Amino acid sequence: MEQAYLRKIQLSGGSTLIVSLPKEWVKSVGLKKLDEVLMVPQPDGTLFVMPYKKGPPNEACIETSSQATADEIIRAYISYYLAGYETIRIRFERPLPELAQKVKESIRRWLVGVEIVEESSIDITTMCLPIHANLPLKNAIERMGKIASAMQKEALAAFAEGDRSLAQEIVIRDDEVDRLYHFIVRQLNLAISNPIILVSLGLSSKQDCLGYMLVAKSIERAADHALAIAKLVDTSKPHDFNVIETIEEVGKLSNALFNDALSALLKGSIKLANDVIIRAYDLAKRIEDIEIQLLYSKHNVPLAILVRSVLNNVKRISEYSADISEMVVNISVAKPRMTVDLFSP
Image (cartoon, rainbow, N blue to C red; front, side, top):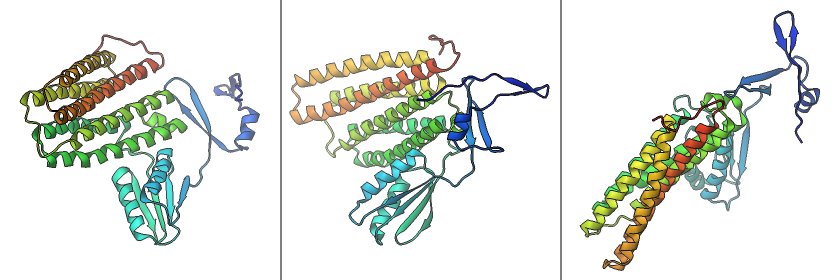
């Protein structure tokens, strides 16, 4: 069980305030005389103290057998990437050039900030950059959200027009959303274990990390539902104008909810977040009513099933918008020494 220590602040030399470190803690972390400790002031007023030791970057090695598939290898690689490892090696049992090429293509396709620094016939060494100064956390979330929002609009347009080429572009764009999602989760995992990164990301506490992880996951899932709509696109589009008009109408409402949820997050607006939650509930009820009407309508069964699939994906996107908005409220309330204004824009 962790032990708490109470120390009095002492005055040294007439102007310097000092406090002693617990002997048990010093021994447990291997500190000795003249070693350094790192002190990081936190936004909530606490002071984080940790041993400061310059050492080699943390490394992970994936040993693969000749029976391993590219999916298995990349799955293991992503787990190390998300955990925050700086150097990740992939070692093959024997030269497997086709498998190695698939793995490298997957890394480039789904991950941000990874460089292949060394390569041989049986070994790939990659370096993962821990922080991207040119892509801060909120900028990455905003970029991810804009891509997901555009995917929603274009997926509905592709469905209404039966445009398969536009639908294929949405499939490709989903990879960019996944890349940003993995990047964001990596940053947040690093922030949980390193208070310096936590401050550099502009977060108030470790609790914020969980909130932003859930936000990123909701955006990623909303993009997946836009992708699902795109995959329903066929060369023969629905010819019922009223059905298409209904889908386009609720699709625009759902997309507006999603955009407002992102605005609430970036602005920290609890009022807008609460508004999104209420509107998302109303839209879900409306979609359910439309689905019931389809059930008892004279539309042919295949068309009814297709339309209900699209509507279900639209409804799920609106539900993820509500989830993002709930996180906005939670993150705002969790900020230290803060008075929450429910009515400010």
